[in-house]
Image 1 (cartoon, rainbow, N blue to C red):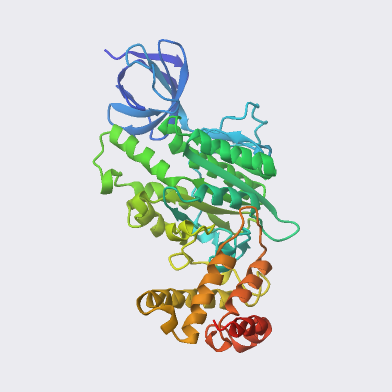
Image 2: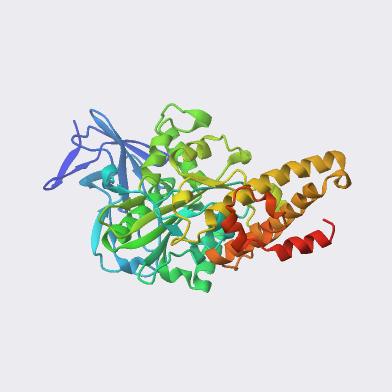
Length: 476
């Protein structure tokens, strides 16, 4: 006989918990329970724990316990469902606050009064209502702003590796990023998933010390927190971002770090449910799951605000073909790849310029947006650096003394490009104009007739012949 206890009108309690398995509980003899529905489970200790349905069948439901199942037995536990999905309270006053993955305070302060309650899963943005992203975000980092410009409404991930400074870069972008315009409201949503305690302290201390926390909402999930909460963390962050963008006209930059920790939690949850694994043990629906996060980005017709995503992921074994970066690359509009070789040379931020690209950059730069020479000098820098890498390999074979003077000039260009343009101080913020001026300083090491990607009228205005002559006098 089913132990179903009618408690409140419209709410049914079940004392038919069959099994507690990792972060999941299996409830038998359910009826009318829906996917993603929330509720609570109460053990013999009387402590309520929030649950969310992740699987439903004809006569059962599987729910993940968002606060962990430690000390929760199957026998004597009671579950009740609320007949709705998870809604979180949102308000403009969340700026400056630190929350957990469920949207609850983590800074010891009470939540401010809610202005709206929004579904954590978001609402799909009609493709017809989308506007094409065409306006830049200034991050203050030369390689991003100069060569791979971030565009409002874009998804531009960083592909990093273990031991590379992606956390420093995330903190720097969160501290420095802005949009131009006196009347533009800008906010950062910083979602951290599976962080170690020392990493969390680094971000918290950095944001508080520099004052960046005033325009930032931090959604923090630690490695010691339940994996079910890790699954919610990016969705909580994006729900707050959607409120600020669509209801309050903010331009919002959402930084997600580390998506690899999120994918590992997804794999663990899938394994607990007994699902058949896909590539490298990850669930076969990981592409779809990633899309539910990444596609909550863009600009909408009739809305002043925008949502831009800056996901950061660490590639296991530096393998860019691994399922996590591979699937991310399919969904997003470009990627920024960090180089272990440049980091070994003491260059920060160590971007692999040749492997990095922003597919939307071409429409977000130029006169009236950044500067009229931007597109041309960016193309020329990448072309020249690519050739200089080939010259470096040639110099290893035949020796630098056997290279032509033009080839030696490319070697000089590569050194200047890495040390002056790519390399940048952690607290150094460069405007678009400063970045482009440095680019011309570097590119003017080459003879002017090597600037095949720059129109003559642009070259005439910006090329710095004095730098070329100085290098020429040295015999380089």
